[in-house]
Length: 95
Image (tube, rainbow, N blue to C red; front, side):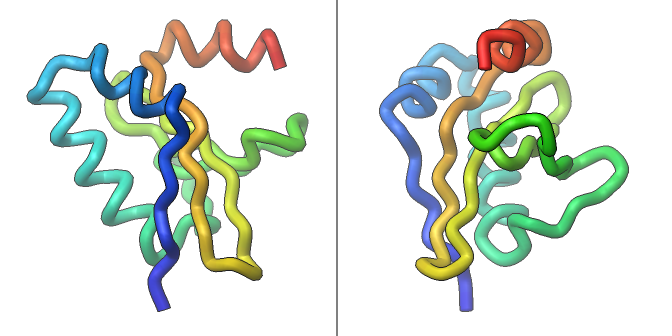
């Protein structure tokens, strides 16, 4: 059974700022990786963020990072932010 993907308003505004070519790549990767196996970590693509309660996970897509939480019971993935690599470092420092 697939996970439902919910996108916060902050993540939607992040996507609006991204050039269309990269936007399509990001949205395709979010759908393919997070819909079925959002908690399966890998060396480079999906990483569990242990130092934080939220966001729980980070998905790397080229120079962009997608931060998200997973609710296993409700089968829901909540995309919190979609940021460039530089913005992601600042975002995590603030957490």
